[in-house]
Amino acid sequence: MLHAIKHGLRNLVTLTGRDGRKQFWLYAVFLLLLRWVVSTVATVPLMASTMNTAFTAARNSTDPAATATAVQANITAALPQIMILGIVISLITAAMLLSSLVRRLHDSGLSGWFALLPGVPYLISLAAAPREVAHTMAVMQQQGPGHPGAALHATNWSIAAIGWLALALLVAVAARPSTPGTNRYGPEPVDLDA
Image (cartoon, helix red, strand yellow):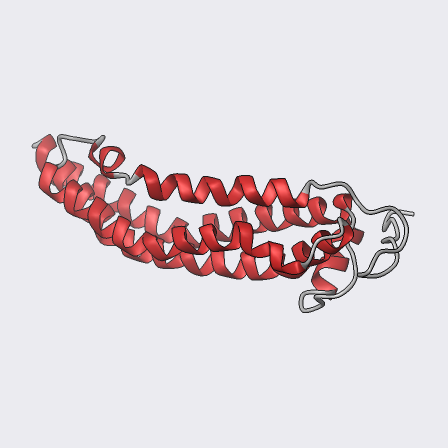
């Protein structure tokens, strides 16, 4: 796996040549794990603030509704920061995956332009995120803390479906079999573990 990661990182801006399926998927899993770690580390301070608010409100008030209101206000205040952070991390990891996806497409005999198939729906879902977060925040504030499922009901499922479509299209184009031997994009990729 380390060879696949090194290869992916060394070729971040290389849009020529070919990457085999194993190379691509090992690198994609690395990016997924990296994204998860960075997102978790980045949101810990925001979550710690929410927990601190909850404990402080619970300690200073005997009214559970007041505690719930304070926690919800803190969560609502943190949502825009979490959203911006999520979009930035998503764009960075997508950019890091792009060249490897183009080379993977080349390996299956397709033009790198086919990366637009998953890329466009993914960018649409990211572009819709600010509006969706604003809508969720409005619903949460309108419903109040007594309705913990308000955020779930506020979700625009068509935008969520576009995000899932992007993932399905990524898997579909990246899982295609390799073209044996040399193709118009270059020689067959070397197994990096060999």
